[in-house]
Image (cartoon, rainbow, N blue to C red; front, side, top):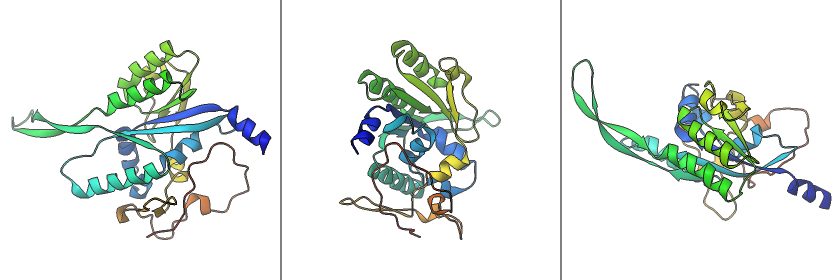
Length: 246
């Protein structure tokens, strides 16, 4: 046990930083709503090399979209479930800005997301300054984060930035101009990291999966499928009491 503990301490500390809307839209394009009920801590563990790295932090940057109550309820429920497994959510906001139709000239108030990009950038930078991690996995295809990658490379040459592209998206070449490390997420990564129907941690209120995110009839969760035994290394997320839910 002592040797296992020592090996764990010697591992590189990894952190995952998620551009919530970039990831959401890519998963939404898969047209399988049940994939949205995703455990981002477990997602982080699926992409890092667990022989050499241990996941110490996951940050999810997002904002609640105004005007659609049912969508907000699902979003809030996901945030609550993520909190149970140790994921920190940093919320931005929406503001309404004037928009104009080029064809007819009509105008309307368009909801525009604010602060998510800067929250993501500041999270990476602040954690690097406070030496929270050695490797930062930046999950976004947004070219605006090239400035984050550039500053990270210049200020923290001893740390490593990994560009993580959402499913079906290509890497930002502007980000890759500041790091040679990249991972392309796919549907399997998301599926491996799905939450169960009921997410609970002892001593805290359980969170039930929204029925809109129920898997199709007969679906078998990834961890319940027959597979050859494999040794698991790395830091696990807080233990969940798993129930199939609805």
